[in-house]
Structure formats: structure tokens, C-alpha cells
Amino acid sequence: MNYWVLSAGGVQLVLCGIHFFAGGAEYRRLRPGPARADAGKAFDYWLTGHGVFHMVSADLLLGAVFCLLMGAKVMGFHFWLILFIALLHAFYALFWLGTLFFSRAGWADYFQAQPQWLAFLLVCALLLAGAWMNG
Image (cartoon, rainbow, N blue to C red; front, side, top):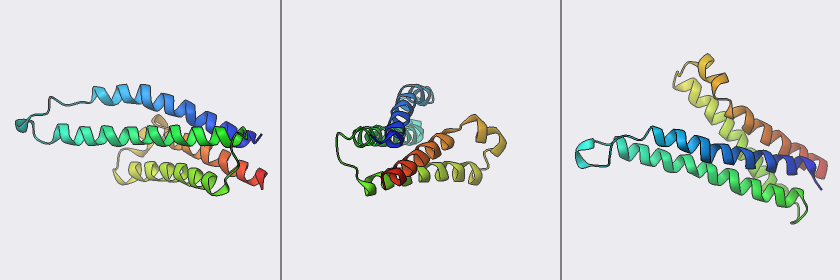
């Protein structure tokens, strides 16, 4: 068993649940009025954002499944898949931090209030440790 990769899969599974249920409910509260021609583009933009939001849920779920299978040795260890999932999470963290910086959202307010970047880096570090130990 590769406990590092197994742990990364477990963290991703927890993150997926939080993202899907708590984050999804929060996102639904932001829904503008009904989709109508006279409502402008607000609903269209919201719908696109909601779809993209749940693409991250899919990434977290698929990453969790493959990490759990590889960590438990149900399937063989695939270095390049582990590296891809680790880099995906590293880029999620970097892009989130970049979004905070470039949108001038109030770095101090959101840096700590929305620490998903830290969870993404944790998964990345666990996967890199698992790849190193499998080595």
C-alpha cells in the first residue's frame, strides 16, 4: 500500500463532497432570476460558471478514485497519472492565488477566508511524496 497516495485520494474525496454539496448549495444561492430574453446575460454567465464549478467536482472525484485504487494497489502504480493529478492540483492552487491577486479581491480577506488553495497544495504534496516513496 502507498499510504501517501491513499491519503491524497481520501483528501480529494472529502474535498469533492464539500465542494459538491456545500459549494454547490452556495453557488445555487447566487442564481439570478429566470432565463429570459429580457434578463440580459446574467443567467447565461451564472449557468456557465455553475457548469465549470462542477467540472472541478468531477476532477476531484476522478482523481480520488484513481488515487485510492493505486494507493490500495487495486490497480498498478502509474507515475505519469500521479504526476498529472499532482500538477492539476498545483495549478488549481496557483490559478486560485493568481485570481485573488489579479482581481484585486482584497488579498488579506480572501487568502485566509477561502483556503482551498492550501487543500490543493496538500493533495499535490501527498502525491509527490507517494511518487517519491514508490520510486
